[in-house]
Length: 212
Image (cartoon, rainbow, N blue to C red; front, side, top):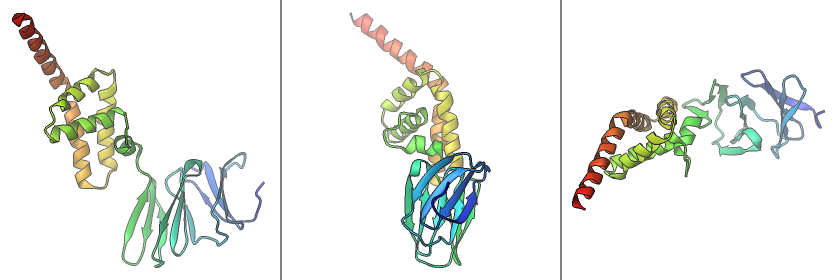
């Protein structure tokens, strides 16, 4: 049961969820079967938005004259101020495009692969591989040690390399794309580099024994 009249509705691209904006400013997200409510969010605005669209399959964007409100899973939200110029929001498979007379902007959720790499203190294999690549570029000799440690963890490199490639495919910045691909390429050298590193370690151990 909804506490107020519904003034605007929008169905998610997957057809499973429906967002309803009500006259009291409450946004409700529920299953299209109406069997369960997923989220209630108070927008603190009884003014009907100009548009309400789905941004991907798990976030809803509402637009007013001078700001956008993006509401994600678990009620997390972001507000974006706008200059008040006429605009139109067009949903895409993985986000929305915002058109004005002069511009076209893409708003999308940060892809999981990019988030896993760029998130602070991330311990995901792709993040560790990217960190090793950055240290290699800086001339840090510990980069190969990090690569070897990652390669010794079962399945870690097999997950890290594809994740870096997917991150490059999602990112819109050519410079970042090249960095993600450089990390993937560095990870692909692991089968060749790791044995070399192990041989060097063995040689050092042999020298120490001879000195004794």
